[in-house]
Length: 403
Image 1 (cartoon, rainbow, N blue to C red):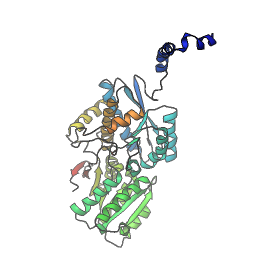
Image 2: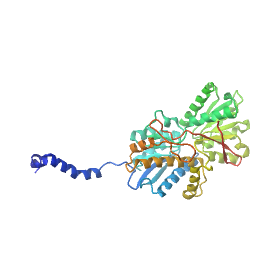
Image 3: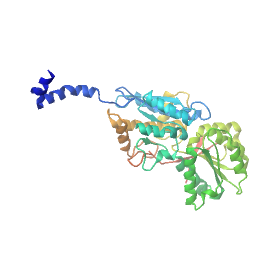
C-alpha cells in the first residue's frame, strides 16, 4: 500500500493539496499558544515582600494591580479574557525573589511579570526573564538597569526612576529652597536602588559645577534598621548641612530622621520610600518629626481630583474596602491601566512579541492625570513627570512645586 501511494495518483499535486487540506485543522489545533493565556484568562505573576520591614509596599502595590484588573474584568475582560494576578512573597531577598520568579514562570505558568516590588529583588531575576522572553511590565523599582538606552525589548517601566527623582529633589533644594549644593548630603540604601539614586545626585551636582565626591555621602544596609554610621557621618560633616537627599525604604529612613531631627535638616526621599508608611512611622515619634519632609512621586496625590484618581478612589472602595487611597496603590493602578490598553491592542493573538509591539505603539495615552503617557521602540518608560509632595503635621501630604 505504501509503495502504491508513493507511485500512484497520490504523488501528484492534487494528492499533496488534499493531504495539506486534511492536515491543516490538526496543525492549527496543535499550534503553540503563549503560556498563561487561554480563551478565558491571562495569568500574571508578581513578587514582593508581604511581611517584614517593607510589607506595606508589597501590600499596596498588589492592591493597585488587583483593582485595575477587577475593573477590566467587570467591563468584560480584555478581548474576552479575565486578568488573574498570582503574587508570591520574596522576603525582600534577591535569592528568594529569583526562586519565586522561576516558580511563577515554570510552575504557575504566568504569561508575564507585573509590578514586582524592589530593585535588588527585581534585578535578581531580570536576566532570567530576558532569557525566557517573558515580559516584565512596570515593576515598582527605580533601578536604572530597567531603563537602559536602548531599552531591553521585554522590559517596560511606567514610573520615573530614582535618578530622575533625586535630580528633581536636588533642583528643588538648590533652586527653590536656596540651599547651596555644598550643604546637601546624600543617604543611600546599599543596593541597585541606592546606586541609581546616586547617579542622579552626581549628575545634578555636576550641572552645578560641583564635584559629587566632595559631598557627604553615607549608606545603610538595605535590610537593616541600623543607621548609626550614617548618623555619625552627618553629625561629623565639616560643612554645616541643611538638607539630606535619601534613597531607601521607610523604616530605616524614619529611624535616620529620628536620630538627626535636632539638626534642623530638610529631608527628601524618592517614592520607593512609601510616603504613607513613612508618615505613619514619623507620626508615632511626635509632630516635630513631620517637619521638612519632602517626597518625590511619579504620580499625583491619591486624594487629588484628577479624573483617573477619582475613578481609582471609587474602585478602591468597591474592590478593596477598608484600604485608604495610597501613592503606591495608585501608581500600580495607573500601571495596570497602561497594561490593559496594550493588551487590548494585541487582539486575541497574545504573545510576548505581540504585547511588546502593541506597547511600543502606545502614544499620547490620556489616563486622566494631566500628562500623556506612552512608549516607543526607543522609549520603554511611560512617563517622566515628577510630582512634589510635603508632609503635613497631621500625616497628610500636600503638593509642592519642585521648580
